[in-house]
Every structure is written in structure tokens, then in C-alpha cells.
Image 1 (tube, rainbow, N blue to C red):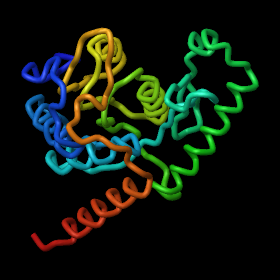
Image 2: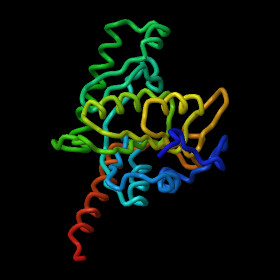
Image 3: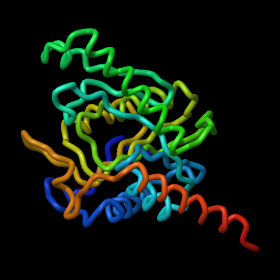
Length: 237
């Protein structure tokens, strides 16, 4: 694959470049298709917002879709700010510098970790059931709806490597240039269609239409695509 950080130069530093998440997934698929991907790769969506992006990408590339559950650990007084993340295997990645900066007590931090572990376990049951995520020896393409701090992605990547993934690729519609450059050093390849430089960054600014994706919406989309894949595999050839 060669280049570790791949973008669409025509989208650099632009806002509102995607109509919605499915459109972003289709744009990402075109970017990936030009770089010799492993035809046996699996697409893993980070729920919930990453599921519509990943579903469109997987459809366009003809790849199987699954989820890799991970969730940020938020501050007690500001649920928009995360000080770490918990992955599907229960592992935790903390932003120790932020914890110290905001003066979060150790008991508060640990409580947040335990609450988030419970959330992740519940979400795994909701979206995957009892089937374990088997990635041993696989090439996985981890998809979210954007790159912000990168902590949730890093937690997911570390857990996937512990689970035995052979090659880890990340694909996101949008992300900050400095953050993408750092993350690219930690993966086999990073695809960011819309790279943006500057002092401020918001994932939502890349989209014309932006709203939260509920767990039920993510589950329905995964179930619908799973049913389509089952029908396709059963069809006579």
C-alpha cells in the first residue's frame, strides 16, 4: 500500500463536503478502492455514528461488515469531553494529562471507567450478541464518522491487536491534519478523505446533515445488512 496517510486532495480544508454519513462512506470507498486493498479484509464500524459510514463503505467494496465496540469515558460535569476510552475487551486507555489538568479525583476517574465498561458490555450484547469478535490473522478496516481526539480509535486499535488482527487500517471521512499524522504512525494505513488544518476542528462541520445515531438505528442497519448478505450468499449462482 505504500503511503500510510491517504487523503483526497480536492477535499483538503473544505467544509460540508459530505451530504450525510452514507455519502461519506461512499466517498471513502472510492479512496480505498484505488489502493490495492486485501479482498479478504473486514470492515469494523465503531458504533453508533460509524455504522452508517461503514455500511456504505462495505457495500461499495463488497466486504463483510461487523462492529468494534468502544466508547469514550466522559467527564462527570461535561459529557462532551472524554478523558479516555474503553474497548470491547474491557481494556481502558486514559488521557492521564487531561485527568491531571481538570483535577479529576482518582475515585471519580475509576467510577467513570466502570460506568463506561458497563455501557460497552451492554452495547456489545445489543449489537453483536454472544458471538465473540474473531479477528485472528485478519486485515481489518476500522471505520468511524470522523477523527477527533483519536482516543476511542486508539483504544479500539490496541484491543484489535491484542485479539490477533494481522493488519489494521483506519478509514474516516474527516479529521484534523495534526491528529491524523500522529495516528498514521500507529496503523498500517490511515484514510482520511477530508483533512483539515487550523486551530479548531469539529467532525460535524464536514457534513451538510448531522445528527446523533441511536443504538437502535445502528442495530437495525446492521441487522438489515446482515439479512441482505445472507440472502446474497444463499442465491443460486
